[in-house]
Amino acid sequence: MTETKMHKLLKDIGMAFLYNQGCFLVATEVSVNPHGKRIDNILDRHFIIDICGIGEKYVPYTPFVERKNDYKYNVLRGIEVKVSKSDFLNGFVCSGCNYNYLIIPEGLIWTYQVPDGIGIITIELHMFEAKFHPFPLGKFEFKGLRILRKPKFKKIEQYQIDNAIANIAKMSTRRLIELLGEKLSQTKLLDVEGKREEKTR
Image 1: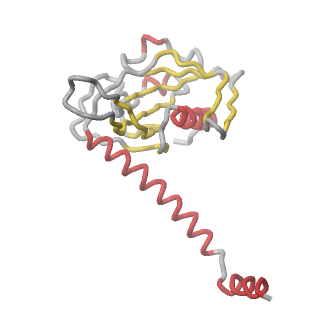
Image 2: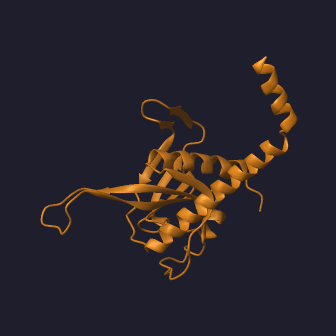
């Protein structure tokens, strides 16, 4: 099925949103491991998530707990994009990540229609704006983006997190190799050597 401009736009916004949430790896169309997955909701019947990000969760030291230091561990944040009611009713990944979100145009569906625990992000398309501030924060500033509901943390198995990290890493590496292939196929060694000789004269 061909992706609409609206769907692509919301995916781009979702990637920027996950970056703001502290994700250091973000990709689209990521497979989440279905093995042992329990279906919690009738809408939860897919295994490819529109946007997936890997970030860190910080756990501060707590007295009287059997560990000596603060620590961090990787968590998955996933966003599903829905641009029509029929697309929403077709189902989506509701429980493949530690934090699961739905991103939709403003007014598409009612909050009660979204399963409990899933965060809801709405976009007011007529007033949406995004600005990126590289320094010092390195964050996106959004206008027209509203978080109607925050997601609840969901514990998932470590192999699901490892699987998503591996899938995103493979996709990123494949793209880098494709770009490298394009670059090297257009490069001629004689041209490089010739330029080097000119510089040394």
